[in-house]
Amino acid sequence: MRIITRPDFDGLVCAVFLKAALGKDIPVLWVEPDAIRHCGLEVRQGDIIANLPWKSGCSVWFDHHVTNRIDEKFEGVYEIAPSAAGLIYTYYKDRFKTDFAELSAAADKIDSANLTVEEVLRPEDNSYLLLSMTIKNRAECEKHYWDRLCDLFLENGIDDVMKDWDVKARCDEVIRENSEYKEHLSKRTQIDQGVALTDFSDLMIAPQGNRFLVYALYPETHVAVKIRRDYHETDSVIVSVGHSIFNRTCNVNTGFLLSRFGGGGHRGAGACKMKISVLEKALFEIMNTLKENKAS
Image (tube, rainbow, N blue to C red; front, side):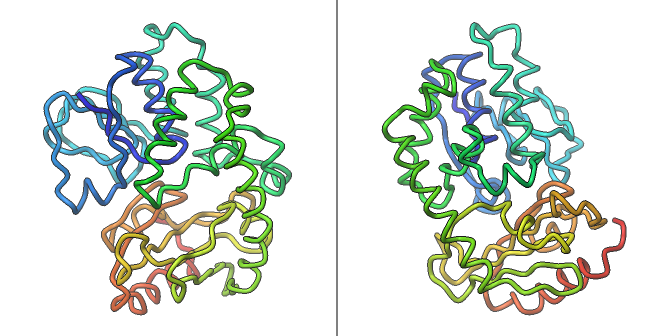
C-alpha cells in the first residue's frame, strides 16, 4: 500500500489524513499529474491516489479536479470541492484520534484561493498560507521535507510546526523570495484585454514566489497566464492559467481549456506541459480564448 499524491499543500494534507486514518507508516509517493496521465506510472493494488487523476489499478481514489471526472466505478470520493483533503477528512473523520478540523479548513481555503488582498500581500501573517508556499514541487530532492511535514502535522498543531527549524528557515526564505518576485512580475508581465501574461520561458530557472500576487498587482485583469521552463525537461514549458481571485469575471473553464493541450485542472486554475516548439501556436489559442472570455 502506498499513498500517491502531489507535492502541494492540498496533497500534503491528503497524505496527513490518510496516514492518520490508515497507518502512519504508509509510504508516500509524491508525483505530478503528468506521471499519471502520460508517463505510465505503475499503480499497484492497495495504492491510494489523492489529488491526482484516477488510474486503473488503484484501490481507492480521492479527487476534486473538474477535468478528472471518470465513468468507472471506484472506491473513494470524486466531487467538485474546495480541496481533495476536505473530501478525505469527511470520509475518514470517524477514524481520527486528532482534531484535524482546522487543518482541513486551511486546505479548503488555500487550494480554493479563498484569500483576501491583505493575506496575499502579507502571507507571513497567516501561518498555513506561508507554510504552503514552502512546498515547492519542482525537485524530488525535496521529498524529505514533504515527508517531514507529514510527520510534524500528525503530531503537532500549526504553532509547533512553525517552530521547527527547517520549516522556519524555509518560511524566512519564502518571505525573501516573495519580495523579489514582485519585481520579477513587474518586469515580465504584460496586460492584454484583461489577461496578465507573465513569461519566464527564456530563463532556465524561473523565479519563484507568491502565486497569488499577480492578482493583487493587476486588479484590472480577470485571469493570469504564466509560462516557465519545465524543471525536468528543458525543451518543454509549463503553461499555468488562473482566474483572478479578486476580479471574478473570467468565464472560461480553465481545466477544460488546458485539457486541449494535454493538461487539466479546476474551472478556475490549471496547467499543461508542452514542447517549446509548439508554444507559440498553443499560446495564441489560449490567449485568444481568455481574451474573448466566453462562458464555457
